[in-house]
Image: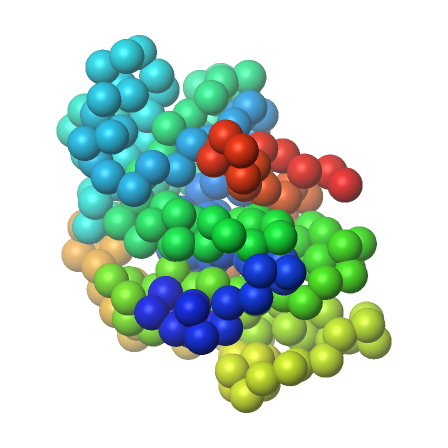
Length: 234
Ligand code: MLT
């Protein structure tokens, strides 16, 4: 699935939904869990995040790639160091990534994926043996390259196990995009819309990290009851 507006077309309540925002929300979530965060509550609006901040919560907030003034953290994976987040519950709002998580809510499992936890996500999907829908956060409902590439990488890993096959043209397009560009990711990504946004705001420092495979063996999963992301090991 290539963008949030297409999600209803591909929606399957029995599937595992993998929400992806490579630059940078779901990479940042995986990094935060890798660094010991206890839970992350994705919230849709800045107002809601501010309300949590007023009540004393630790808050990460980003709009249009910039950190919101009132927040403790922005949306860089490097903000969420073990010293700052170990054992802590964090409230998180971002322009597109946390919005996509709220859209995904009604699936069997909702987890977040990024290149840094690709293998852990693939292992989780295999363990549960269910169909997989990748919900790309995109940018303001539009398609983007980096999230589609992640979808293709996940298709490639799952198909290589012999237990999955690409069920739609969307999966095949994404897989082929990944296969054609996996060896020069930085060059392929360079002319994209989001790279321009990050560069214009001097925030492209985390891009190589966001494109590194499997540095975080974590699977953040949304708990349907509480609406928070917690670590899943099973
Ligand atoms: C988003 O949610 O749109 C992003 O993660 C944007 C960013 O901070 O790079």
